[in-house]
Length: 383
Image (cartoon, rainbow, N blue to C red):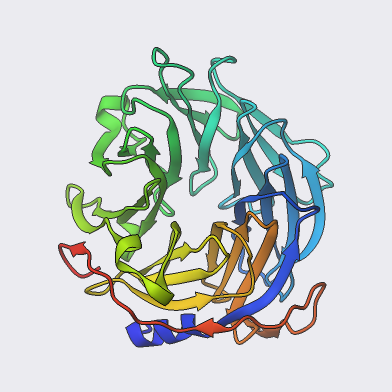
């Protein structure tokens, strides 16, 4: 396992290796998903603000677009590849459907469409698929103050509704995230500020609700992290961060409230994007509205900016994906660009080192600035 200095050095060597533009300007990249496969040949799927999904060859040194499909008639709120059935691709939308696509085909039509029990109110704002691909879970938004929000479950193989929870959250569900190994464990986040952890092996919602955690603000991102992925991180829409230990009654491991205020000068940031875990150390991706990406190590005594990635994006970055197999980072933004950042412009794959010097678009390498400025935060124990 790499130590802290080795991980920081690895991230500080990331350079812009690939840049790919979506079909036209003024199209935001909203979501990313990468096939769960050990193969060097795998797909990356990106959703955009014009309701389309675009597929790219990814993993062997390219970001070359292969096909695109107009997947929905309204905002695409989520995208995931199957965890065990790798060729299946799922998308959720405000158009009240979740669609399953076979990525081996031309994707003109979905192979499965899941709908809720209420055709007028079930607008899907987030979703996930569990680790064995048997259960799909989605959250809905509240149409008005008198309507409930729901966490809805389907049997993916049968395409049938299994049930729904409607008591644990009081406002729009913004995040649904299954545990990467436990198919019955799912976390949800909401604009009500709560993050809930459920055990789907229980018979009722009351019994299934194992933890209720309070972020004190509208939840923007959640994810599993740490050893055995027992910890849960949460980012909010006002750019605060929490990490809780879900196996220790939701103990507050980390509370980070003022990162934007404490990181100033060359390290200043405008927003938080997401987190990724490298060898049980948590890194936070942040950005500026001019397109710079700053990677912040939040696992030490105080968070510090490890690396700034420049000259890839020229606007706000909305999504990031860390690929541990190739030690590379994929980012998507409001400038309609997808950027692939890798160590020294090369991808390290399980099958060897692949040069990415040649490709569809070959920009000059972005300069990588390494910073180690600290910011104060609250931690109850080392992460």
